[in-house]
Image (cartoon, rainbow over all chains, first blue to last red; front, side, top):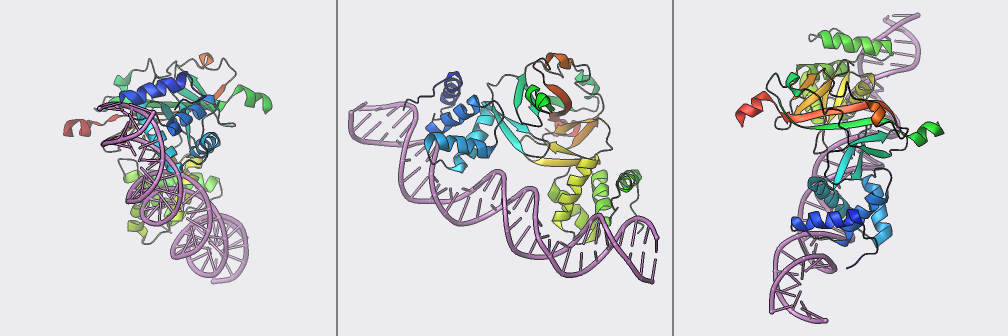
Amino acid sequence: MMKDFECTQESYAREVLREKGLKSTTQRLAVVHILHISEKSLSIGEIHGGVKDMLGNTGLATIYRTLEMFEDLGIVKRLHFPDGGHGYAFSQGEHVHHMVCVDCRGVFDFSECPAENFDYASVEKQGFRVKDHFIQLFGQCGKCVEAA
Amino acid sequence: MMKDFECTQESYAREVLREKGLKSTTQRLAVVHILHISEKSLSIGEIHGGVKDMLGNTGLATIYRTLEMFEDLGIVKRLHFPDGGHGYAFSQGEHVHHMVCVDCRGVFDFSECPAENFDYASVEKQGFRVKDHFIQLFGQCGKCVEAA
DNA sequence: TATTAAATGAGAATCATTTTCAATTAACTT
DNA sequence: AAGTTAATTGAAAATGATTCTCATTTAATA
């Protein structure tokens, strides 16, 4: 089934799915599209709403299943908000970090890693082996600074 | 009411609470104690269990209320696990970060900030103003490396 | 010790997430 | 282009996490 919202991101997702032997369903591609066209990260509910607008009724469980899978595949990145809520943003598996606007919840990627030159030896003294890190910046985006 | 588990951390919590005009209840001090004696971060359920062991029945809602308040006061730090779960660890408001062992969920503080020398100007180009950051390292602690 | 506002407990209410299973569909075969 | 099959979906129920309500209790002060 050919969709009228094909785009680079969608092709990327199709590719990743195919490599893993997973199906490129209409619902999965719609999730990619919704995340792609959004400036800000989206909650599960917002994604569900967006997909329903595109496709008509869609089960919420499908959205949960899709996002969990996409996170494992590196297609989406889950963000943690200070209030405990979550947001999801499209990602292509690269090492990027995110700035989150605490006012509008907008998400802005940046590729320079703040911890790039950090000497892990200092924290690995007691035998801890660092394998990954999670970094998120909080602040206000340009628009919200002006609006304030 | 004098408790038999007074300790530095407890005194610190008492102090912070008093400054804000909040009460140092038995339940709140028990939460501090439970977190203090634990090597690893604890889930809400584990904290609830620990407090019940100390005090007998204690409402789960109280644990939620206490942790939320403590987080605001900087007395505890909430950690985000890759699976979406949360852990809580005692904190004294200093700028510290955490290494989390993905095997045993143990938490290890370190004060050297990986982003300390990072030049935020590069990410603030588009007007974003960075106000805070969240950094968490994932890996394996010494014990779990050996056990593996 | 009496007073009072803050905090608690218990359970209901709400909200988030996962599970189950019959029906549907994408991908592959012919 | 139709048939086959395993993967996926939708719907609703089940589970789990979190918040709310309000009568009762308690810590802090006078």
